[in-house]
Image (cartoon, rainbow, N blue to C red; front, top):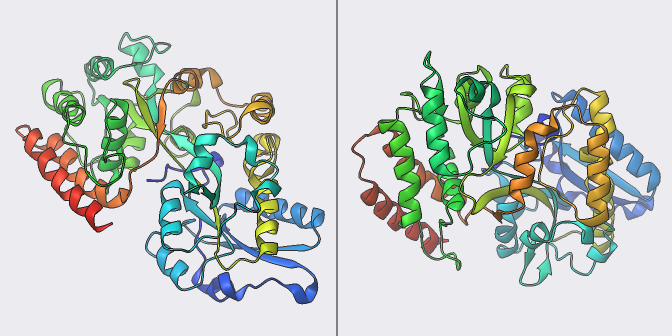
Length: 449
């Protein structure tokens, strides 16, 4: 799954619009007649996101001024990548020269032979060696580099500090284990008046997504290391479901309304009626700007369990038909737009602050070393949110393994949705049977993949 959005609540925003299809991919060749190299790029914010659109256009104009031999043609629509059309665009030669992908797409795009090999050119990307190795590895297949990470997220425990205090809990000491989550949820639910201690998703594949994150947190996995067999029918899998069952039915700390999705849970948190839920930091500005919460009340802690957390994110890959000149131009564009610490579309924190966008959220760090220090220094200098509320998340993440989503993630999540929803809606749900059945279905999905 994608998280809810990037900084400034920019959601995953783009696939080439139907009106622009004739300008995509193979139809936008290297513009040698004019002496310029033309590249098409996607994931430009739509016109409805006025501030982000303005920033994006400003940054492209600045890039073209610095590189008069490069012509950047951006395409906008919503979302950045539509799973329903993504493969068809690739197969039909309609994909942009430089195109957006989720982390989980990298291997698939390579497997279907639709990605350019960037290995001979990546030395020209000034920022490449400064990017976190584990993120670079996502776009490295069989020793070859096929993409450049741009941003990422990791899951944590978002909680309401005001409800913690009201329930006699210390908001400076958030739960670190699932037993502690359960105890805190019970105390918060005891406040009454419709207050829910802990909420979880269980529909639209989001329940399977969260089950995966919770399984990772306990040291388990969804599929085997070779990606061929399900590994959900385990002690760790049972522990995840038993905890959810006990909070829902024994403690009654999850409320009676179930089959929730992200918007339901965000609404509960924003209205001050929810104590905790799992999410990435980019939920925080949505809770404040759209759901009625206050920045001072919302905090985030690392994933309970102490073992691992689910990470996701995105990057750019290059059309296999892109010329060497287009690849070099695209890499320059990525450096300018997204990969210069403290600058560019995602890193110009002073510009973001000036436009009342949140600065200081604890996004996972893209860079390392001196580049990371510079990026963090500029971010801290322009912070306009209570960064102390996120320190536990930053500190705790240092000790967690970062794990990406499983292969065939959406199909697997659909299977696991049924498992989670059964546990949350049927008090007598047979956990062992649910996991056994799910394991068989996931094996089938992996076998077809």
